[in-house]
Amino acid sequence: MSSFSTYLIGFFILVIGLAIGAYLLGAPPMWIGVGAIVAIGLGILMATSRTKPRDPQAPPPR
Image (cartoon, one colour):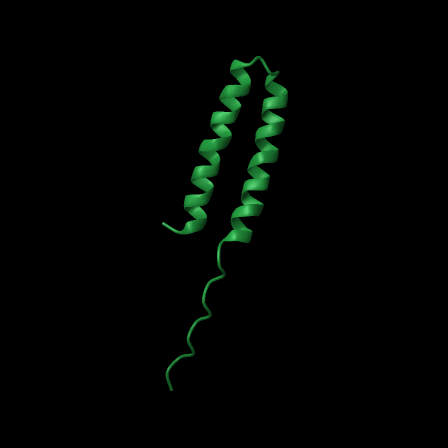
């Protein structure tokens, strides 16, 4: 599993936990959804910036 996948899985678990906590505190579901969408977007941006780019492919042998 790549570090990108691991980061996103952990971030989704965090967002789900925060959404459940907000629901239990009585936050309106619409705002929970808005917050979850924004948090997931930020998570994707952070995951792509933190993972290293792929190594360039080696040239074919001659």
